[in-house]
Amino acid sequence: MMNDSLANVIPLGVPGGVDRSLRSVSDSVRNTAGRTLGRTVTRTGGLLTEQIGAAVGSITDAATAGVRAATRRLTEEGTDLTDDWGRDPALVRRIMLLAQLRWDVSTGGDQRLPKRKGALIVVNAPRFTLTPIFTAFAISEALDRPVRYVGRPDDDLLGALGRRLGGLLDHPDEVAGALRADELVVLGADHSSGSRRVGAIDHTIVGAALATGTRVFPTATSSNPFGRHARVEIGTPTRSPKGRRGPLAELELADRLRHDIAGLLLEMGDINTGTPLDWLPGSGIGAH
Image 1 (cartoon, one colour):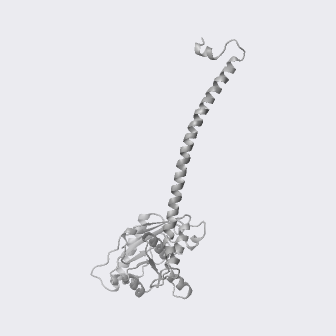
Image 2 (tube, rainbow, N blue to C red):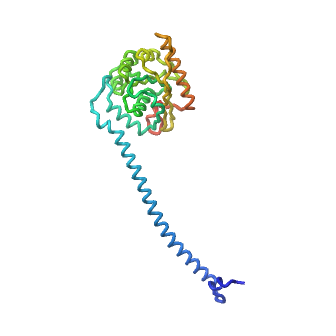
Image 3 (tube, helix red, strand yellow):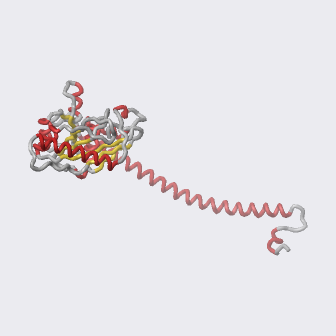
């Protein structure tokens, strides 16, 4: 038996009354729900629009501040300014800004490096990479101070360019002079074929650090040849051998550095190393 409420809604004895009444009820519910939903969406949409606008404004402000911070030193530095070793900070800053468009570098352990004193930073160098230059740029960006690298060519053209980028000759006397002047210097080990292998380290350059009483930091670098991400991980200073002097002390410290760098590489896990071709769009990064 049909109840009274349903009988009031559906007229009996009228052909098609059921269908017309159901359509009427459906239209009424739909209109009421539509008005309610419309008001809700309007309020929600306005709030969402405000939130999106605020988020976009925040991102824009952050990006603008980042660009200003990254270019402040470039705009404040003279165009022909070079230091005692021929490094051109304006040129270095331009190249670093360009590199940031291609590479996303994370630097770890930079808090271990001295803020004002000098240090020798020894890194692994996979084959066909520019690890010392790349590492010098990354650490310079992290610490906001000049960082030099060992191994610029000794010729007119490439040598002059390397000098402007902060390169030092592969000579103990020049490296010792920079360390005495409280400079940060990056030394690359000999190129190795494996991602976890560390090549031989020039013990004469390590000897320059010993002669000047400078701390030596093992550093591991890794990169992905098919992506933008790269890492420079700086370890704790390698202990200098006690009771040793001369070449034996240099050789022992160089061996300890190789062992410490290998340990850092193991902690970082598997790595893929890039090549100079990583400068091309769509490729990975260099020696990072």
